[in-house]
Image (cartoon, rainbow, N blue to C red; front, side, top):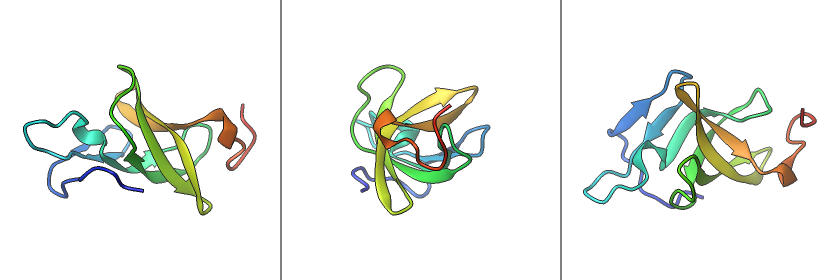
Length: 100
């Protein structure tokens, strides 16, 4: 599921405890979103490792995916309140509980 190199030493930690890994190098367009450990999943109490699946399609989101209950869940990574979170696409609900 991982598409981009994620440097084990070039990281960033957000206020919500998520840890982002950068690909590094002179043409790093992803920043710390290549791989995000301990990333909260919106609408659930879960935290997962989320992998970028492409470059940013808007200023506010980066296409991403993670595994929940053995299934690949697609969505995007976005910034919220000084942290980041993974937002699954609506077709994947309910993941753990009904959508609010």
